[in-house]
Image 1 (cartoon, rainbow, N blue to C red):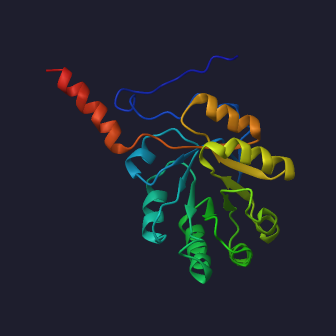
Image 2 (cartoon, rainbow, N blue to C red):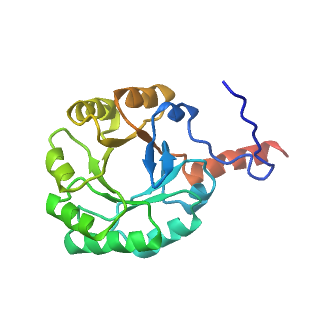
Length: 220
């Protein structure tokens, strides 16, 4: 193995690093950039201080262009923007996807309940990849791929490796992003099952600040 020179500086030496084991996956090449690690966060402070290859910005509220614009403007890495598909859907999701591309998003993410005809309509309006979220074997994955989904985002909690293996067997060539779980072993299981890229959930801003405060207390 070749030695890799490193520089971290002083002020940025305590930034967040994604688990190194993620490097074992193949990655997904999007517009010439190879993406293996994807941070799952909308916290701009964390997004600015993590070494993930990309950001997946989805949240449990109606998608708003002002939020995606803030994240894209702060991030040093490509951003995949959530455009709904559950409570928010239909023509609104189409407009959000179109606006996300104009803001500089590298891809759009649709929620599990999205209808295939909306995927098809979104793909008619954008040139960036559409990422369809898969949470169960019971979903109609065929219709989503036929409608134009470019990448599958698999999120099934502890069952994620099993669902990834199921999808990979049926669709050997589809690009798969999957949640890796909290440990190196769970990440490796997901990669071995067939995931091309891994989403990583970092500690919250509150958790990180609590660690810093604990160090400060012991310094007096």
